[in-house]
Length: 341
View 1 (spheres, rainbow, N blue to C red):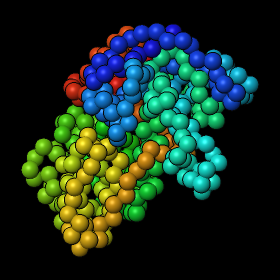
View 2 (tube, one colour):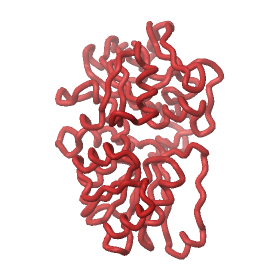
View 3 (tube, rainbow, N blue to C red):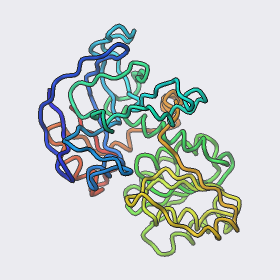
């Protein structure tokens, strides 16, 4: 079967691999859509993600939806549209027993060693980690339920959302999901900041009350002004660079909090401990999502979250290299770019 392989930094090629044979408990899915996320771009441009590297060509992609072609006794009907949770936890370790499945130390994750990713024609995965996609959701945009689940988890980790002024720095897929989930959760005012004007336009359409060009030296002052001068209650860092966290910290009020969902290229952040201590700023990091797919699907079905505006470009599998180039360069208004096997 055909598959996309990354051979090295910015080296994407289409090749062949053996079709998978589903193990007990797994269903076989014909992949219909895979979207490229920020962590995929870290691996593409830097050769690793949070220090994890592949030693041989690997198949990227973990935001994936498809059609069941072999239920393999799992109870999923052939032809069912499903979105996959890319994290398969063990469900018997300390963290799983405490309900923190996303922190499982025995977890298998799509496109992280030793599991190849989803940019291929067929994929076998545990049926327990598949969620039925309602007919109202286009299968091409259904992979975006994964970053939406991350957005739901990020918002549930925040200290104050209902009635709050919220800042979202980074209006890529996860940031735009956070904008919408925060709105649906009752945020009073949402401020969105990004470097790309087109993304700010989408953020405004999806619920942001104020948008800020993060390129401007006055960005922090503008965020403070949008909050009434005292600072936002909760800020979400959804971009990755140090400058994004700096903006969040500068714009957050004393006794407020910053939720970090982005991944920095250097795998570290720097900040003044004295400043955070004096203002009692709370800092919360986000690791993926924790059983948030059902809520993500509910929000879309209820019309509270729109996925379509975030899927800006679609490419056939043969043009995967172009898809990665466009996603990395963020040109032509690209937010989430899909590869359609």
